[in-house]
Length: 483
Image (cartoon, rainbow, N blue to C red; front, side, top):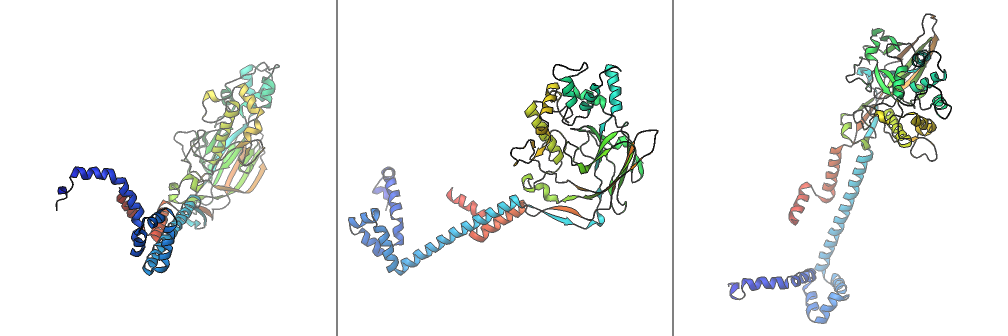
């Protein structure tokens, strides 16, 4: 039979537009009736009162409960539906909890540390040795004579000493060059230039350098390093100012034995024993520093524990492994990241925040950001606020809050033994320093990745497969079905 003989296509389309909403409502209202027994549907539809009560009153619940008790087929069918609904809910909830646990473990427990003892084939790098001049009053006197003549105010020599070897405080500079009664030869800016005049060159600082009793050119391998303490000279460091660093092969292993470095220092100086990515700074632990004076022969025996990193460690985010590799640098004071470099960045940022300028010795700083006399006075007044490092949870204490992560490659350097002897040589002033590994390391730390991205994918995929029998294709099919 041709339907168009009864109703035309245009009339049919018009009726669909008119009664479409009614059809949708009817479908929603009566779709559940297909689950009820036929007798229940007949009883409900035999009069308008029963139908109205079913839709608006409590009749729906009473009818369903009555036939659930009386009709075996209806009871079995509804029990099966409820059972599978509960199973699906439990499966999705269990899957969600396990996936959340996997994500939490991936974020907080992706790294583990172990101690390795397979030391027979290790190559141990000698730590970086940095020499920073502490003071040189003879040179300062000569510079003062050249600048202001031999009859100059001798208080200005103390001013030059503070400017050249600035460590956060400037008592003499403020006393002599601030206020109404100022010294005649005071200078009020360009402190960096005066510091460069005062400090000794490498040739005037070091001579007679030996690695395992073999001589090497001191100033070829001890390269300049800009620090917040001024210009220093470092061997075996990543942080030197040289564009193409020249590194001495300072490796110790079972063939070479424990390494030993011997140098002669011609000035009073601080000698730092630190990791290759670390830098000398105002808060370097005293155990890492030798205070070198004339006519003393210093000997220091050290121990080293390196950190070896799993090759996959770099693929883990910084927040997960809670450390930074040197080339993951987010600082502007030094080229490579380290905890000590980060603390220098903290002080620079706070100096600018409080005094609107920074120390004239601060590395990698634009000239217009370096303090003049008023800025130097501000740095002196806020010495404790700008120097002492405090934890972020500390309340009421003065200092710099530095939320710095450690370096992923930092080395644990221990002092085994220190000794010193007097040098009896009236012809010249110098000191000798011998730093040696007490023994080859027998332990080192290993940072392993125990939960990488692939582990997370496997965990999530296994969980969804176990609890809900789903895969990636299942979700694609769902999306395809609804579109």
